[in-house]
Length: 145
Image (cartoon, rainbow, N blue to C red; front, side, top):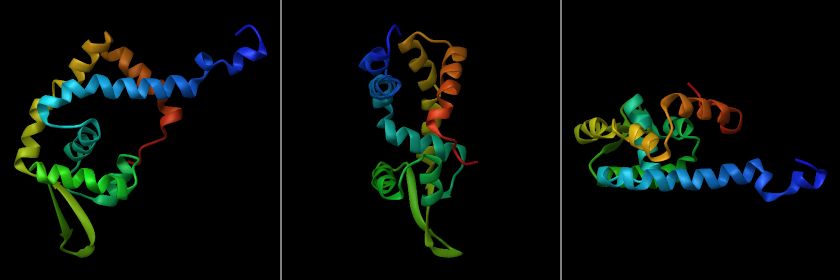
């Protein structure tokens, strides 16, 4: 950047680069996820459940950095598709628990190809994708573990 005015140039803004990249990443995933019958947000829900299922709606929302009210309709659509179950916890009926169906578990096998197809679409290696993901960590926040 040659002058202080360059600091305010749109193309020099980190926020602009991140917003446009996020929109484009979803566009890259769309045709890859379509044969699985998933949208990008639904794919994220399934990824979290493939890691740990069942889990409470609130826990799942925290894992995904989403509000439970935003997540709830996604989960309902996945239930209609036969991929997840929603039910009250036996020991605490206030807790809505989300679990995988057998169909949802089997879908994971088909989803194994998704990361490689995304990398091929953008022409990046696993090491490059990992470095980019790690570089974004200060902006993405930390996922609770």
